[in-house]
Length: 399
Ligand code: PLP
Figure (tube, rainbow, N blue to C red):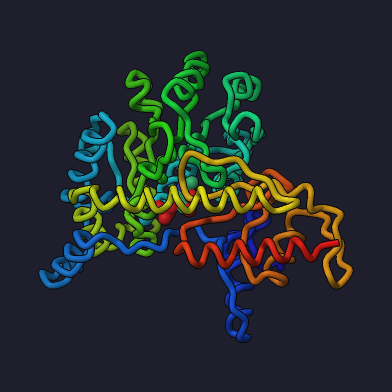
């Protein structure tokens, strides 16, 4: 449509939302469907968060707040970074926004010009390249392999660094692969960046605490001397099952936080005051609720990995974190569905699974590595089992 701005050609609608839309339409038509496409856990938000939100409403904390967040939440964020990560940020080195996504958007929009490059290991979270493209800069993807655990290697990074590189994106635990970088792996990557003092590092820690093997590590804690070049992004969406509250936060150098705040002041202003109060309740509350949740997620992961690998045509590794399986579906390509349709791509496989099994997963194309599928196992175990039964039965019907 010629009425749209040219920049709209650079981005696609979120592919995870597309899967959900199809499933909703099928459900409305009376079919029973299971959505394993959404990046969301089935757990409730913590009581501490809910009570803090109710108290905020009752005490009329319902007005504009400072753009970068209330003092109460910024202090809670600083305490969190110090307590859990050993990173000390000053009051002007943290910002609160409407989800981690908005903070990443702000950071990239505030720093990128046409011609700049951002290095993004693939498979990647769908939004990184699109946000970069919206700014007019160029997303440069670096493919990782299943054999390397879907982790960027120092050699892979070295090869793509240029005088145009402005940012390197590191996301651990990773969406969509569940890969978790060890401290030593992060240190080796950061060592490569010593020779490139103008390159910034985006550490997307949104899946912190959802780790089943090994230990979470974050760049600014590994290399405190690089802190002035690192933006550490986190939020309450995943760890606290608070996706709908829309609260993310970030720590970084003052000049960058200041620029992100200026952008935010001309777009969304502050994140919702009630949600900010809830986030204080979450961050200051005990993390003891996580232990049974992590145990449940680990059990679901093990169940799903075993079931997927028992299906002829599908294969996956056992990821160390987050709540996704990245599944190789190459062996299904070329097979025929009942209606004679030949599966040619992971997009075909995902569409066929929706139709044939009533199960939604997201094709790897969306994450920059095909032919794969992302399955999110943040659903109750019986639901997960039904979905796996349906996937298995559908695959057996292929010819
Ligand atoms: N980063 C990654 C890797 C994600 O998967 C997501 C959500 O799916 C986000 C950031 C943003 O989360 P939110 O905006 O809910 O904080």
